[in-house]
Length: 624
Ligand code: F6R
Image 1 (cartoon, helix red, strand yellow):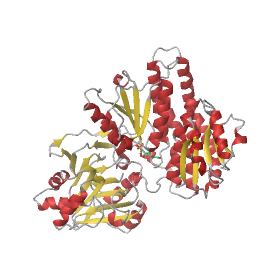
Image 2: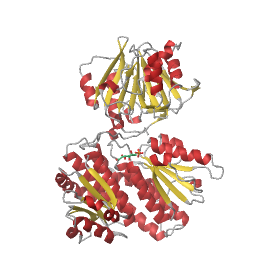
Image 3: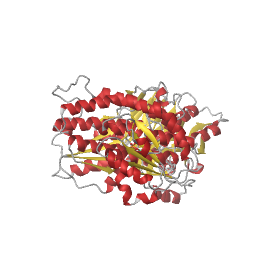
Image 4: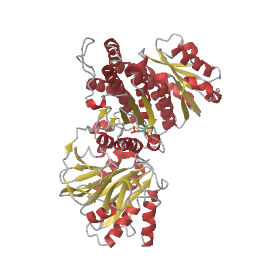
């Protein structure tokens, strides 16, 4: 959460910083600001709200400074007001700082700094940093690097910072402690950013900073040090990013574009993880996940930790792992696992799912798992892995073993195509484990593979045939305040996902329930004003799901059915049907989620809401 950028070179920093922030707005959009050095002074411009407000303020600026830092904020400490926007400065306004993360001991530091005469102007935790740096100079620090080295030792929490000083106008200092930070290496110009999309239009050569590292950037080069002050040798790597991929490409919103990219995500995963030459007579696995053997050895249990949409993918994953591979699987909110982990079980694989690879709760849950296994002599070493869309992320570095979801950069805050990639990861993982445990026949494997291969074109059929219809239908949700989503079995997580998508972007209250659970209380909510969206596709729970839907209809709810296109009775039962092509029940979540995504997208767009950047949210949740 929050995005930071920095630039030092020969060009005008202002426009580079603003365009970098534009690519980081997914991390937060409560306020934005930049600081540059102009005529030997810090020139700090900040604006409440979206980046556009900052742009408007900068329109008349003639500042051509070639050095600066910038920030886009997701408010944690202090309201989203201009006075809380970054950059923050010291009392004399000679030092400016942007930060992503949380300084946990800021109160104590602030109280102490106040007694020494430092004047605070915001409610943020970040503001302690420029004052602390000023204090370090007072206490004898000579260089900016020296001051930052001294200051970081006093900061507790997870943070990434970029520092600018009017008294040291030829350098930029950045530091990282558990929040992401990457350097961009150009020709006589250097960048820093919370994430690579901010850099790719300027340079594809990057250096990842690790925890407890500080870097000094000048126009002549960069040098990285650890927090002890020892130089660290870093090897730059070259990204293979297409800057176009982070544009809307004719779609009105990123979310719409990303919904439409899902067939391609499935195709990419099929290419990456399926052996094209496998036949039903083969005597080896058709799955090519390339995970270490230690992941599978004597495997008895799997536990999955994740948040939000990733958790829903994990719930589908649990169903697949238990059904196909017969392996007991537990799914837990990462934020709950952190403080109430289940007892350590032997021969257990722990999987963290996170599209961003940065979610603080998921990272912490995995860290706890690794730590407690190391400290339990009876338990085997932690067996942890991640399912992520960012193979260069903090989670990937923490666990080492990952399944890449191959979804490409997702900008819309509401996860769609990354969810699809996560589902794919669990199809391949559960099939691989099932193959190894001999809980699946080659024929069933072949049938499921055939089914998987059909999915991209089946998604395309839904998108082509349903889009207009769902757009029209969205108008009936103009005054809706509550919606209930129902699903059973493997489609219960899809009901949860449908509800989450709707509430996060349209601000309509929505709940997902297992269909059979309605009668145990929630059915009391139903009346003509509360529509119900029910998944009822052929399979083990079809009849039951239909009965549960009818119970809702009997309470006057308007009933929407996500049903098989071959279901001839559906039109009699449901007020509106959202048909999907016929599919094996185990594969159905890949298709049933599509109408849900389209519904939430069109309802939010019809209401004129900011689909890609819904209020109060951010794409990467790096705070607890
Ligand atoms: C919902 C959404 C969030 C994320 C959650 C976890 O559309 O995007 O619920 O799924 O914040 O994020 P990651 O997957 O990055 O750990």
